[in-house]
Length: 231
Image (cartoon, rainbow, N blue to C red; front, top):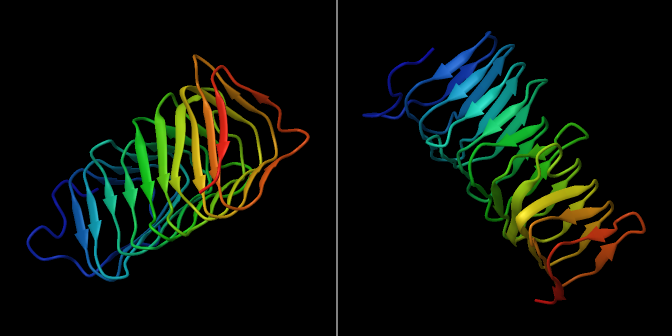
């Protein structure tokens, strides 16, 4: 448990926790090139901002709930990777410097959230990496690919999903979105492999340079407009 701020006056070189039950950061964290690498059989909580410079990223393996509070925005010089059997409550934004962002566990949005990789891939990785919560998820991947391996809006539909930039963009499973709908931009291909449903006037806009594929199983049940155009 870290009750005070870490690296406020002088950044720490890095922080590695190789085994633990719960890990709690009550205050902000600033580190240099060693990054943050955490393995916990229990919960992991971030309550304030995390700022890493150099090529330093964050790697978290959580057995219990990983909480990234709304005040805990991550600004990273390297990748962000979450794994482990525990779920994720996500309220803070995550920004990397041309590095990947990945989640392997179910994610529940607790606030409007932005994931910005500016060139790195954004991957909800594996059959367990569902996303839920009545909030807007915004992704800016630049030239990176954006991939959803599991359902989006499972249980509680997302308020909306906006991908402001990506290369290839793919959805392997069903999507349920509310009033803010779906807005996608890709310089590569876009693929839907399962149904897309919107409610309360949610529209769907796809702007693609490559091929847009809407598979046989990808029925679109929309309560708003559908628009496809090209970059």
